[in-house]
Image (cartoon, rainbow over all chains, first blue to last red; front, side, top):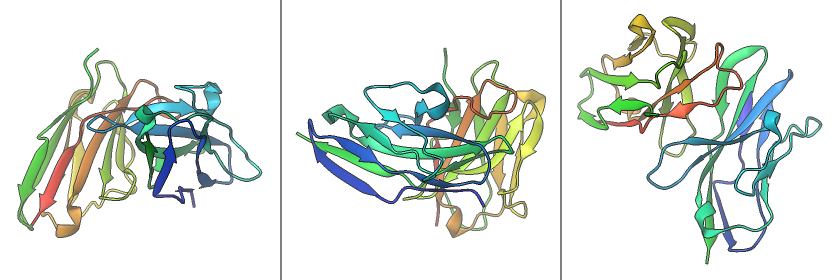
Length: 109
Length: 116
């Protein structure tokens, strides 16, 4: 069955430190993976998707099919990065989206 | 462009009562999703429409939940009768593409339902 796991509920780092939010997925087919972000008092919004292979707000994520992971990384965290981050999975053989339980990133000054 | 609209924003009801939520997607978006987000969890897809047809409703508790998207635009989600475990934020999202796969989903502000 398809599943998305985000092992950390909360991640606290200091401003300027590197950050990595972990995401592992379970799916035997060809996955499509996304990171969505929800800033305080704002709507859930797309941050990036693996298929576009772009960097958004300094964040990158690489799909590792061998490790079935799609970790989100940023070399230097900023206070404005503090938010809730959700990893999501879709795939060519099904139409659903599966979201992970989310990781709250707290960037301290 | 105007975003996805949802109403009401908050609703408190007693168990066994009925409730309905409304969603107006972004104009021209073919795909519409309803998610349930229980506190501390990620959004769980309840039902997905493409235009006015159901693409997937496998996780919709059909004994008490129903949804429709008449004319392929607005949608309503209903719960009848509500249970305590239905307390959650109900999110509506829409996307442009035919299948929704790989398309960016635009989310509404959500409706926070409390069942007492």
